[in-house]
Amino acid sequence: MEPENKKEHFIESIIIKDIENNKNDGKVCTRFPPEPNGYLHIGHAKSICLNFNMANKFNGKCNLRFDDSNPAKEKQVYIDSIKSTVNWLGFEFGTPFFASDYFERLHDFAVELIKKGKAYVCSLSADDLRQYRGTLTEPGKDSPYRERSIEENLNLFTRMKNGEFDEGEHTLRAKIDMSSPNINLRDPIIYRVKKAFHPRTHDQWCIYPMYDFAHCLSDALEGITHSLCSLEFEDHRPLYDWTLDELETPCHPRQIEFARLNINYTVLSKRKLQRLVEENHVQGWDDPRLPTLEGIKRRGYTPESIRNFCDIIGVSKKESRIDMTILENCLRDDLNEKAPRVMAVLRPLKVTIENYPDDKTEALTAKNHPQKEEMGTRTITFSRQIYVEQDDFMEDPPKKFFRLGPGREVRLRYAYLVTCQKVIKDESGNVTELICTYDPETKGGNAPDGRKVKGTIHWVNANDCIDAEVRLYDRLFKDENPEQDKQDFIENLNPHSLEALESCKLEKSLINAAPETAYQFERLGYFCLDSKNADKKNPVFNRTVSLRDVWAKRSKK
Ligand code: ATP
Ligand code: MG
Image 1 (tube, rainbow, N blue to C red):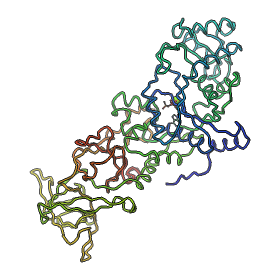
Image 2: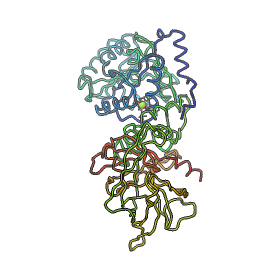
Image 3: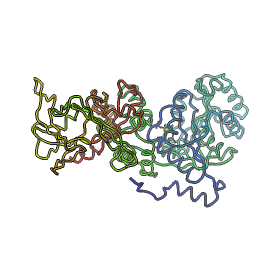
Image 4: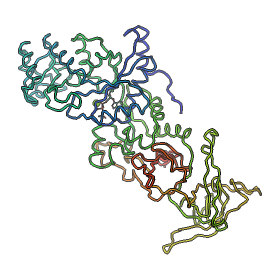
């Protein structure tokens, strides 16, 4: 699928104009600034692709910067995961940056603001702060501490830094305008006391800058030219600009907002994903059903398909929900090109070819890709006992069922034409085995007499196949919008999002499968070895995506 929207998007247009006007000396520098308080999800991929693509397109640079100014929630495991995920998506970031590297300078900037009379230490309690802030319809009230002298403020701020106060006793606030219609400008807190261990600065600091203060200054210190963020930061832009206008910084980056990515049948928010994990609705952050990039990777998605998806959905200021099918089709397009074909039987039915010699094993040649000769061939084996899919047999089939049925002839992919002669059942009447005959003249699948056999089915050799578990995944939620009508999204979980088939039979060549590497199981879909269950004795394969979009059909009904 080609990106439909090859036209430049609005952010690109802004950048082009800035370059034409020689703004920032014609340079472009962007950044992706995650807070290391969780794992990245596909929504972040949109931001990553946007920031790196803009930098790459205009010979610029994109920094990976960890906005690690809230030590209470941040962890090294998240930092490590974020780094490897950005690399996996295919982007190079050099040495990552950390807001915590600027703590000293941010502190100095805060002192500068105090000295200018533009910041003060406020001693209101959290409750009072809230009261004084006002509401959307009512202006706020000045804090009784707003007119403290510069000396007093400097003294108190130093003592905050030295650890003399408890959390919540004092805060440092910017002195802007308590009656501003924008609540973010009503003397926002820029520093607070927090006695927490920081993953990088350890216990060096007990005051930490607030996001709004740290973010714009980190951007400026890094020489960012275009600070791209999602729409919820639009109301923060006046504070971003105020801070940079008040302080002597190397540059004044331009903040531009775009709409977040939302995808139907899933949720894209760290907080909600966390609930799914913590309440054990899924099995960990890399559960292949989750939209986390770790989950998506484990499921078998390719970075190319995600980058292509981000191209196709484009960038705009309008909020929307993207259909999951668009993402899946990007994946199918990519895997169709790349994935070697193999045969596997998910719900096995034993077949004995009664006229085939008992002790014979025959080597057959199978193509790795029907259209791509360059992908070569492999050897598969055939013997008297094989497995076919239970679904490929019907005892009383309708006319148009071109698979196996009593007396019917079918082509075994790459092997022979076989005819079903007898059906064996257990005491309860379940079909347990088929007795077939093969036509030795039809090796490769064609009858010399030219007789037409419509159906071709896949199979594996019972004598050398691999036993494996195959996990089939479906949508994680039942409804397109899991929070429709304000319902708790947990109520909307699809109870059938995971189906584990435990006695699948795979062709022998899959013994060499590498984790997270895609194969097409012919007629079934794309699958990969699960990275957490790659043990050769009990391998687990994940279905990455089905061959066709089964949901498109279901919703038309
Ligand atoms: P969440 O809302 O899931 O907790 P977040 O916004 O807190 O995510 P951050 O680590 O703050 O996550 O985000 C890093 C960057 O990724 C930010 O610039 C943010 O705008 C962007 N981002 C996060 N979610 C999305 C999304 N769904 N679509 C596009 N960009 C996103
Ligand atoms: Mg956020």
